[in-house]
Length: 246
Image 1 (tube, rainbow, N blue to C red):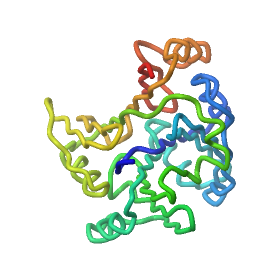
Image 2 (image 1 turned 180 degrees about the horizontal axis):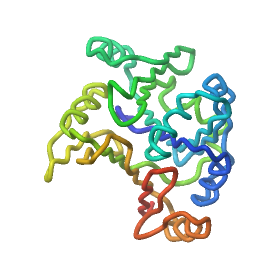
Image 3 (image 1 turned 45 degrees about the vertical axis):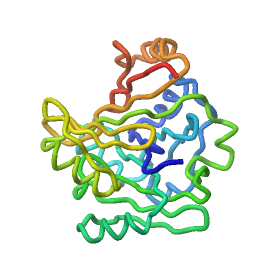
Image 4 (image 1 turned 135 degrees about the horizontal axis):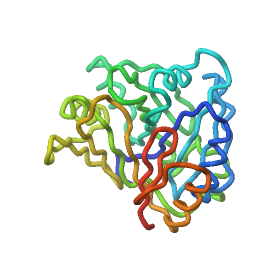
């Protein structure tokens, strides 16, 4: 297993029913409700696709970070991107040296993780996690392998007012080397799925690409739920979800 890699993407929503809507649209397995997110004033649902994960978090208390994010952005853009590393010590040391603030750390037997301040990294909260063993994932729940559906996360797109600066900042944190592309776009190459940073009027997670066995059925269900489902994807919790065949 090569690193760094996208392991989990997190949507924030004020509507708890969006947890079930995402599950139904993408024909996901039974979601895991992580009791640990209650410390952040949230409830959630986590769903496995292959060995990667989608999560929806919903504020259930006042003045939560997720609630402030939703209010500040009118629900637009993904809330958190979680990446897997095999050397969390290196990531933390580099972040500290570059004044990228850690807003939460955990070190337990099967995983170590750090959340980094979105004001220092740009676009969203970034978490970098080292799972032990590498194929495990505590945040997916105790039986995520039994609930996993075929598919996976193949790309992530960030909107940035300064694409070069954001690409360099994310690349520094993740230990990847960004490369310039056409039209002011940058790419950060990762294992199993790249990050594309594109010019935009503000900084946010804009799009993610999801490999799924039946994209057409997903689009049909998204339209039935009333989501904007056009072309190759649909819009969910302020993020464009592009579907490709798995």
